[in-house]
Image (cartoon, rainbow, N blue to C red; front, side, top):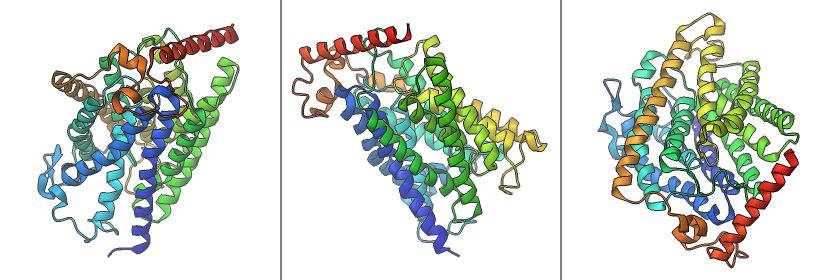
Length: 434
């Protein structure tokens, strides 16, 4: 029978997860240069609409339709056919509530990718690539893990999306940013965030919405939801502290951007494990996650030289990888009888399943994204040219300015002033380090 309390919690959680994508828009929007703020926000905002339409028509059917050989859901639920007010199988909520909740997951996943290629992709190409990615990469992976597919049959655990959401989006973002190439001037002058208060507001909205993301995945107002709520808070807090401390030690100053990034890293790391681990392991997962993601952003990116604009891979790809492996270490049936015991509780199979699933997620993200990118690049121009990058994509792509005071936005003089200020900021930073 339908339980009204469980239904209310899942619907509220769906609304919390919805807030995460506009929150992501602010988080990313504050980190880009002012001439690209609207473009960055528009990408996340448009995804909310486009992927919601795709989810109702096709996505839910592909993900949660009747399983076909462990590979994909059948189209028996296309257009939500047969999905009504009836109770979800083996659940206590209407299936439509589950549809709404999962829709918000499908929405935010491709939005995370946009941080990797910020400030240099044309809007038309972005829209086509993201739509194809949702259909041919997200939907199959979600089915493999959550819809009864072969990874689920293998025994892989992913409570709220470490494999399906964070690894998939982070690795796909890395693939796109490499194929697209670096931003003009990357590595030559500093490309500093133009509005850190906006970024912190976005991080706060993400942290807030993440309680629906993780605790809502219990699909009921119950003890498992409470456990996921506490483990989420513990990991986010621990990662914030560890990132700031490492940054402070290495650079001599603790930054608010580092604190916000550490918070997201901890939230990412705990996502696959939130409903399977106890609070103390959650602290460890967050603590290690903050450190690992910091070095991925501060060291690995510099060593390898790729231009992951807003660190989608460094935070989501690396954080999701660590969290998925950590689930295989600390998961316990004492928390969730429907899960499994990890390595630290005497079992090895779960860790094996998690490692295999991580490899599958990386392979799908890299190969699938590469193929889709090549298809789109043959259909239309993907990369903004040099003059468009100098002018800024806000005015070039959307004919708008983010700030009324930017009267000369898009002009050669404004571009020269912006580049000069970036070069000056870079000189100041270098002097401080010396």
